[in-house]
Amino acid sequence: MKRVAIMGTGGVGQAYAAKFISLGHEVMLGTRNVSEKLSDTSKDGYGNPPFSEWYLANRNVKLGTFEEAAIFGEIVLNATLGIKSIAVLKSAGENNLKGKILIDVANPLDFSKGMPPSLLPELSNTNSLGEEIQKTFPGVRVVKALNTMWNGLMVNPALLNEGDHTAFICGNDAQAKATVKEILKSFGWLEQNILDLGDISSARGTEMYLPLWLRIFGATGSGAFNIKITSLK
Amino acid sequence: MKRVAIMGTGGVGQAYAAKFISLGHEVMLGTRNVSEKLSDTSKDGYGNPPFSEWYLANRNVKLGTFEEAAIFGEIVLNATLGIKSIAVLKSAGENNLKGKILIDVANPLDFSKGMPPSLLPELSNTNSLGEEIQKTFPGVRVVKALNTMWNGLMVNPALLNEGDHTAFICGNDAQAKATVKEILKSFGWLEQNILDLGDISSARGTEMYLPLWLRIFGATGSGAFNIKITSLK
Image (tube, rainbow over all chains, first blue to last red; front, side):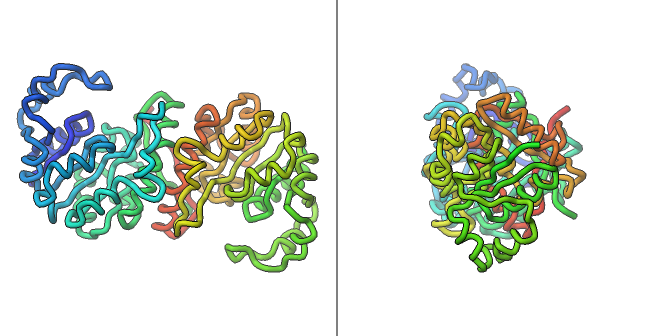
């Protein structure tokens, strides 16, 4: 059982927190300001109930500042908005993250140029959020994973097609990737469907898939889908 | 039976030419300079035999300049390098393309920044090659299609998983998309696997998938794969 720090208290962070708890791990969610977060009774941008309601129903989950969460976690998961991720992780403290596995599930979406969102120009094409985190925190073992699907599927792949669809991982540290692969398998991902794309620069590929994901979502009206790689045998 | 103009004589153009001929269509390949193309006996960048050899074995295929091909074709297919597509289509002549369906299967790959290629910054993220063609030639009915897979699969989807994998189309003209859908079906694409993503701005999605395609290719060592969208029933 691990101590898992989840940066970000939105729908994605909540989905991971509930899943890790259900698997017997300890979880602390990190947020900018704990008392503000608990006293906020407004719905989020997607119309979900306020965090405080979710928190009351999930009392096994701890809540702390980004810094407290980083200190707490053996494994850190970045579920913040891509545009804020670097600043959040800096405020968590480089020394508190050092040597730890950081699972980056975020995407560098840019909502400033209309819908559907594009990607932040400085974090796409010849760069990526995953790489930027790795460059900013060279002592952290960044693994990009699970950023290519709806958060309901990330933690419950068996919801769809008996779990027979594809997840990608990338990162520079083989041991960290092996650990993350085990975590994915504990969520229900099938070993043969977890494709290691290589080093962290491969995050460019998985993040640049998001614009296609958003168009499929727009065309079908549902985010409850994923892609399955089908290859010549 | 249609007269099909294919801009570009590389492997992608050749694959389409052979397929359209096999289905009983008339085909003219467009190139910059016909006599130069026929006298070129060097292998292409991928080690394929020179065009002249292929041409000798495919004598039903006509060869003309870009302009001659545009005049010839009822349907025009863009199989040029993305970096050259706009210039090629300009040299084909706007008036020769007017009112016609242009199937754009090209990708705006940028080989200038290392391998695997990135996308041309001016044709990605908040723009795309498909959109740029539509903006440059407003009288042309642009349909983006089949740019998300290896050219062997584009024209022979049944090679893989009994044809059960996904193709995308996008464009502003519903009738043009319906025609292209019929062409895809004649290649072997299954109706239920051809997903209409919407207007031509959706080409951003299918083109930005290429960096992921390239990473999967790099990780698996084979381009003989495609994605299948799997959805909650």
